[in-house]
Structure formats: C-alpha cells, structure tokens
Amino acid sequence: MIKRWDVVKTCELEPIPTAEGDALQFRLEVLRHGGKFVAKVWRIETHRIQPTFPQRDGKPFSQLADVELLLREDHMSPQREFKTAAAALNNALAMLSTQLGIKQPKSRRRLQRD
Image 1 (cartoon, helix red, strand yellow):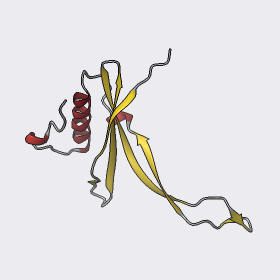
Image 2 (cartoon, rainbow, N blue to C red; image 1 turned 180 degrees about the vertical axis):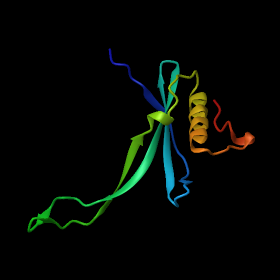
Image 3 (spheres, helix red, strand yellow; image 1 turned 90 degrees about the horizontal axis):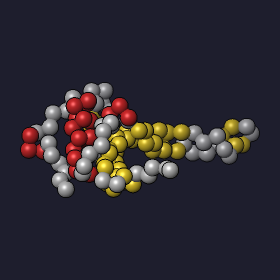
C-alpha cells in the first residue's frame, strides 16, 4: 500500500540576508497522514539559464530565462512526527533558526498555534 501525506500548510519565509550579501529564501510545508504531521524545509533558488532550443546556425538565440527551483533541505527538516500541524511548523522554524544561527525573540518563538 502506498502511504500518502497531504500538504495541509505551506508558508514562505522572508529572505534571510547572508554575510556575502546574498539572501536565503525558504519554503516550509506541513504534511499530514492520519493524525501525524511532519514538516519539510525547501530552499528557493533562482537561476538564469540559456535555453538550448530553438537554435539558429547551431547557436541558441532565445533570451535568457530566470527559473525558480525548490531544493528539499532534508538536513534542515525535523525527522520526526508531531500530533499537530502547529507543533510540526514551530519545530521546523526553531530548527531552521538554530541551524542558521538566528536568535528568535522569546515572544515570537511560537509563531503558529492550532
């Protein structure tokens, strides 16, 4: 039997500035199977690519295209199940903050509630 997890909540975080002057962008998803919830962390990256088709005289002539990619960050996703969607999301936010060295004010630690 195939086990299915349904996405019940999705949120994108504001860009997080880095020391190099770039910014990291993340998307969090909370999934449910039965009464269990898990969170997945995705990094959003933008890349400029040169399409290889169509071509003229053996060279691409299309404009450059900006594409957005979602990369699953398994090492930043909690590897456990929770009883509520809020608990899964709060844990993922706390784990991401810890891994990125971002201190959260005490009053904002629990951002989501059931």
